[in-house]
Length: 491
Ligand code: ADP
Image (cartoon, rainbow, N blue to C red):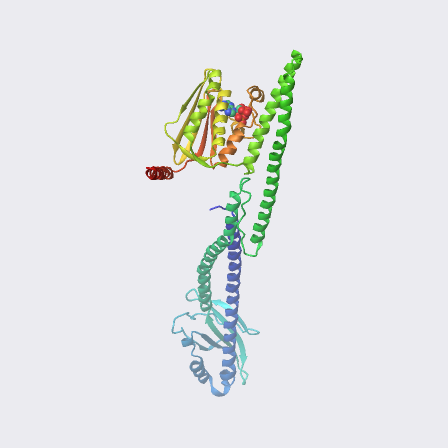
């Protein structure tokens, strides 16, 4: 799980906030309910005491104490209702005290006698028997005959405590469950909400300078994501226009330079024919001609690259035997190798069919083999091999030359990049040969790679999609059938 992702961070924030709020809410409910239950118990005890005194104790002088006690037992039945009632005379003697409730919820035996309070009050009193507490409401009362009493009405406090305990348990179990459910729910919702962002990212990653005509999917949600995808698309459109403009410009510039260069070369060649020229003049014109030819080569190469890049180059797509093409090209370059006393060998054990432009694929072989010969000293060896592997045609050009320094390897397919400018110039290089190879390979849906060790040699591998054997075989069979059919018609 990516802990830096928006999804993760938002979920953590949201879960943290929710847990904090729920804890705050739980605590307020717990303490609020505690206070309310205590207040309500106090209220009910006070009402009971007041009712008892005004209804039964007020006329104790007339009815007699035993009648009052009977009335209290009958109407309030403290032992049955889990209540405590005690009436104490002003001399401190007890007129009535209730016993242990039937449910045994508390034992009031030994509860200290009250002092005569100035006014009614309610307090928590620890029970001498057991470890519970009772809430005791105490009031003083003067009967009509003037006799004074302290009336106490109590109820066990653990009634409130058990309610609060139940609430605490519910909150303690419920809160983590709610938080866990909201985390998973939030994570799921977030994942769904961010899915379009993933789709946008994947599509954006696919767009390179070669397929700027592609667009990102528009997320029709009417929200920020839709605006983002629309803005990104208009940015890609602007980039597309800028790239097209640059490519057209280089293609047009190289094209425009061709004619004046041809004219220049023709004129220089014409002047060079003049018999009246001095030796120095002839040498100068010869060198000017050489430079003009180099310039023409550069312009030609630039034109090829920019047309390939702009997708404007006319490519003849035909099925051809790449092995046979490489073999024939090597044959043509053998003189070049011989001149440098380099052994140039080719190994093309079987036909390898590819779909492509013959002239351009030949240029790939020429550029790579020409480089291998150029950068390999006399006595060296250059091997060319074409094989088929996993549905690909592989062209391998291996030499025993000076190799390429590791730091230069990532750059050698860049335009005008030369490891050793002076050396490349001396051997007639333009720094565009490998850039052309790369562009042609890309235009054929293939790629070129290089491995090289300094002072040991280099190995260039071109990988092109091979035409399937099945199709090739099918076509051969079809051609044979047509030929047979024609022949039998002629017969
Ligand atoms: P150039 O016209 O200079 O040969 P390329 O684009 O064909 O330009 O090659 C770029 C650079 O890569 C060359 O200048 C050379 O330094 C290096 N290079 C290419 N092929 C080889 C090779 N077979 N052995 C050593 N160096 C090579």
